[in-house]
Amino acid sequence: MITEVATVTFDELELDCGVTLAPVDCAYETYGTLNAAKSNAILVTHAFSGDAHAAGEGGWWSNMIGPGKGFDTDQYFVICANVLGGCKGTTGPGSVNPATGCPWGMAFPSITVADMVRLQKKLIDHLGIRRLLAVAGGSMGGMQALEWAVAYPDHVLAVLPIATTARHSAQQIAFNEVGRQAIMADPDWNSGNYYDRRPPARGLAVARMVGHITYMSDESMREKFGRRLRSTDEFEVESYLKYRGYKFVDRFDANSYLYITRAMDTYDLTQRGSLPSLFENISTRFLVISFTSDWLYPSYQSLEIVSALRSRNCDVAYVNLAAVYGHDSFLVEVKEQTEIVRGFLASTFREGAVGGS
Amino acid sequence: MGVREIYGRSDYAIIGELIEPGTRVLDLGCGEGLLLAWLKENKQVNARGVELVGASVQKAIARGVSVYQGNLESALEDYPDGAFDYVILSQTLQETRNPLKVLQSMLRIGRHAIVAFPNFGHWSVRWAHLWTGGAPKTELFPHEWYDSPNIHFLTVFDFESLAHKQRWKIERSMFLAGGRQVRMLPNVRAEVAVFLFSASA
Image 1 (cartoon, helix red, strand yellow):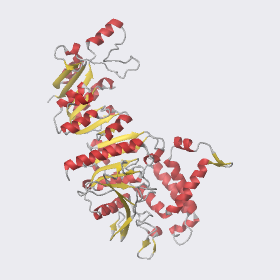
Image 2 (cartoon, helix red, strand yellow; image 1 turned 30 degrees about the vertical axis):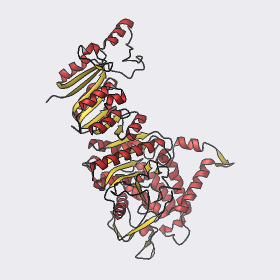
Image 3 (tube, chains in turn orange, yellow; image 1 turned 180 degrees about the vertical axis):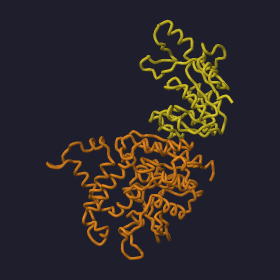
Image 4 (cartoon, chains in turn orange, red; image 1 turned 90 degrees about the vertical axis):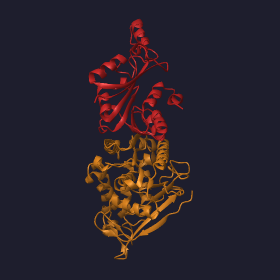
């Protein structure tokens, strides 16, 4: 499967903080073919450290997106865009501030998950799609899926919020804060001004190491590393975390880390009203999935969403899948997830076609 | 083709017949969603289900049925009043911890309730109990007393008495033995009873 990233530039984007970003780039990839009725488009939203490259070689969800897979590109037109604030083609703190001609750094305005989704809506409009068949994503991608259902219910038939929450808990904010502090404690961070010099690699690597621990489970770590030694004075798990940490530095911008984790932490659907009141009169179908070993986004957070949906008699399917990989489970090839997503999409597509637009 | 030919379950066949097309249906303890999938396909119902067993929920969702994984007794509390036209409880009433509360909740969230349950009053059960002196173990109740999921044993007579006491309106009742309908002496001859009922006006 050959993939190519495209970029579209929009004149402006109004942000929740009141600032208008102008212009704004949005990098995206598409897979499969949009049908004549434009009724088979699925937006896949990425998690914190993802990018537009979701499918094909090295794609972050390549086991789920492709011919014959859960998101079957023989049937559906799948879109994935790098989020606002990111560092893989979409405008973020590493982009050039047109007012100064220099990278934004910490002068970049604060962003929210709703801002990310507003940019995605512009992209969908740009692609000429009035209504998406589905929006699907895990973790922060799941927050975006939820946001789509609440912000644009008439423009999406179904949403798949996976391993996610309507608001971060103190524990989730705490882990993100450790990551942010690690970056800011690195002298190379230099208040976010490092684009012309050495980036805060040590801080960013430590932040990523903490992140990786939270994405795994006790069981998956025991299975993967146990107490095995890499060398006489280094455990396998230490070596793995360092490797992942420093590999991350090559592909991620520290300031994007700060901005995006902040957007996740401040996301709280309930600030706009109780969850049941937000889901009132929504005809969007929901498939909510959590994983038994995910302690970072525990199932009670999914159940909070599901319970609110059921209290408004919304169309919701929910399953707590048994998987040992912790929060990473949604990214790992889980056969059950593939079957569920495939069946859910097929019935949504079938019934959506009958129901008309 | 009828639901019975497909799935071989006579209670499904009857429930399939009872439900009006285009209605909103909730199936409690829906298993792999076979009945709901059939109702969606053949009666164009708006189908929802509740099921506790994860593997069954996965199969139901993969089949295109919106099923919620959870305990049915606590799940009932979330739904708003009158959310459904029919709430089905098939072969599960005897397994619930608080059957009366379940039945009352079904009538709160649904205009009609449908229950199907194995009739503990069937002659084979009476005979087994009388003959062996032990907890009855029959084709209908195949479990040993210590590993049975059934915690409340009820009969056709028991259900009708409860309905009378609660002033529920029994709209239809159907009784089955060996996949055939029983009309005479259902409390003795029926293996499975199906009731369609509603709260009295």
